[in-house]
Length: 368
Image (tube, rainbow, N blue to C red; front, side, top):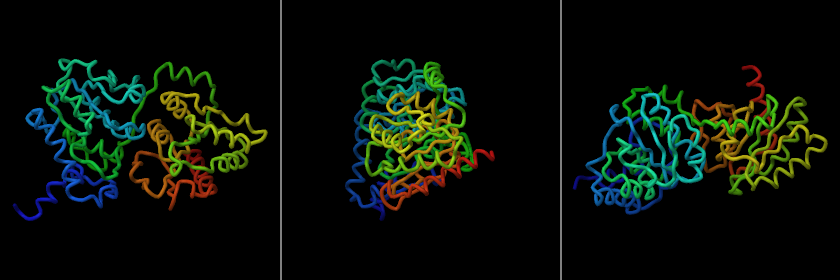
């Protein structure tokens, strides 16, 4: 065989299927042995061959293929889902009708979407006769299983294909890949200017947040977190200091059940200021959290689902990252964000640094 064939064989695992550069960190697979990387290509390739799928793969999404099903499974994180599916707006702009099959807890987030007509978690609820083409988000087993079992005769394209392992900017990847599949012809600069998550809330979600009567100009703080190393531990210093320095400001606290302890710490640190704090911790669905964020002037959040909801809401953010994830892997030029990255865990970022960035973002917003 020609020299270098092992490297060429695993190239689709390590590089995106398009030529435009995007932020990418090969760290997670840098030290993987060649057999491990080769298996990431062989395993899905063998499955596709065994089920007669290679002949059904298409290089592009043709204009005549109007009825599309996007299968996106095996990615449970809210933020990853918002980024991976962000380019669906390009499909709607060209007149395609799109349904989504994804994880159950994520399907709820897209129930009121203005692009996805139907959002389900069980592929058996859908009929192959309703579609011209399947979009496989990746070659993860759960995506392939749904294709093999329920849509085996339908042609398909893939977003990620064999690409698996490196950390990468998922929003930019989604837009660049869709630009390629649709043959849209956008320049790299156009993609960078347009690439951001997209979401829509339902009338019920809007009504639920209407009842809170949130005043204009509120700043949201996304607190709590599932992973200690990626959870900021000093919000109870940042929020009180901000309220002391910004006498006309009100703050809304957002987070899941794991944010209750930090919420209580913030309240204790703000004696006599409770009227300036709107407590929505463990009180909102994801869609309601998005709607609340949409009404804020600014969101302050660590890397996670609520940060990406804020990006989808189109509001400015102050974003916190630990040493493992560069802000370039999460943010795009279309996001109005001031990022802070720690040299260690998230909580190594000094509270005063966060406070200064929040005040800088508020000043920018006032000027704008």
